[in-house]
Image 1 (cartoon, rainbow, N blue to C red):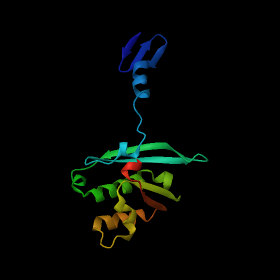
Image 2: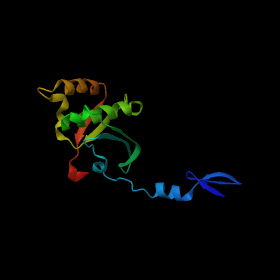
Image 3: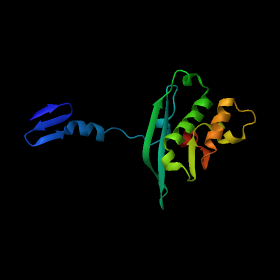
Image 4: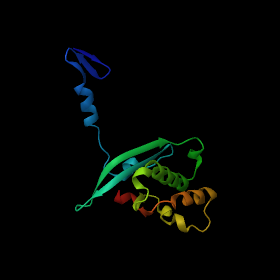
Length: 144
């Protein structure tokens, strides 16, 4: 029996190393939205589904990506809006044609469709988001 690149090779075949599986199984799972909050360097999105009758949220998928050099220069509002645009496009097969909610810690995005003088970037993204049957809701940091 030989341990090689996270596998155990033996006469019985190739099997995953139990120590490596334990490391993945014991990895701490984030339980709060703020554990996956956007930063100056990346975007994150979580697709969840409410399970009735309890109303508990269950994670379906996580998604993240790094920001480009240009995107890092965006204002906090623009970065948060970019996360919403990117997240809805990423999970488009799941949300298109269905009503859904987007929860954000950035309160000003709740009024995205009603901004009096949005930047051209926010206006463009707002038009992209109009294609979805969605409601943007605020969840304060204390509620995360």
